[in-house]
Length: 515
Image 1 (cartoon, rainbow, N blue to C red):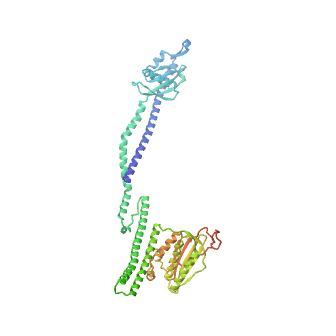
Image 2 (spheres, rainbow, N blue to C red):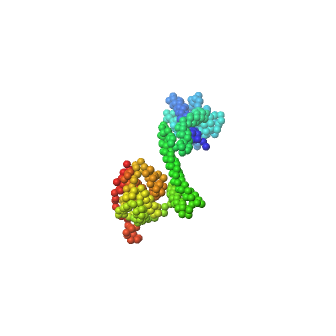
Image 3 (cartoon, rainbow, N blue to C red):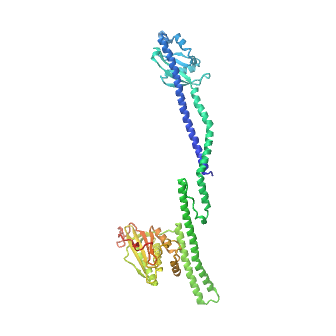
């Protein structure tokens, strides 16, 4: 495959040849027209000179023509001997036409032509008006092949002479365009060759930064070199933009590779501990000296670890399918108020076990288009997360409020340990857990995937998940979902479709800052 430099050079050569051809044709045509004009001017000068000789003869009283009566044939204008004696000494290609349009005199050059050529010249001369030009093709090889004729008229030439038609061979006019074409054909290969060489060198100079950019990109071939960046200073604006785009892509790749490495290490860490425990329990249960009650305890612990690993694998599979876009949601109209009350029952049980109080202000209802199972999982993830990181005696509050006509917000507020400002940007990363959180999660069996799955569920429903927290003062997680534009009124009768009522509520995040 040819390089871009070669293709540009070939394209330039083709365009150059086409331009030179068009220029040559235009120049040849203009040169030919100019030569014909000059030839016509010279022919007019010949005719004007003959007219001047005839005028002087008329003024001198010479009789150049007379009228002869031929009886029944009518009158005819005849030239006198004085006309022949007057014009014979002057060479050239010309004829004198009488007032009736017939030939009165022809020069020696005309008389030497073949009869057919003479007839053709006379026909053109008879139809040629004053100050007009015409070309006549001759068959006589002893003469020029083409003659340009022009006519001149002067009333002072006498009553019997109408006009003088003079001509010049066109070979002189054709020679200049022929020389021009020959010169261009001789010089064109040299010009094209030199132009191609110069174009190839210029293209090479222009593509030199591109070659350097390609070499720099080729040097970054694995994940270990993604920290390198391409030089951003170029004289070419397009290359500068390309370099900036590639650097941004490398930054995203570096972040993705780093996240992948962390994800692999964290997943291995999470699986290593339960696998070790599972292996130890199985080995203990298989030992001959193990009592039946101890064997049952070991098998029960192995079953718990198996269930824990199954949950982890299921969460990983959910996120993997979500990343590939292969996780289909079953969308249907869902009323959020009954769903939140259903989740509240589970939250109340979990709160009693953890020694927490669960508070719920009046809930507002709204209809959303979503997957009921996934929305329930979303709400439970946020609630269990708040319960998990809130000390005994703390408080967890659930709320469901409309925001304008188009959105509804589900919020979970707790009085737990909170999240530091440095850790807050990372809480939705997979397997991420702050140091304080990690110690508690090991006790409660968390993997650090709940918030990642929650964020995916919210984004899949076209909403947003935000968090506001201060260390030691608790956290506030807010889910904002779009409301279905038209839905059945939950309090109305079946079959009615009024617009859902809405009330503008304040932002519940105002009590927290990210600092």
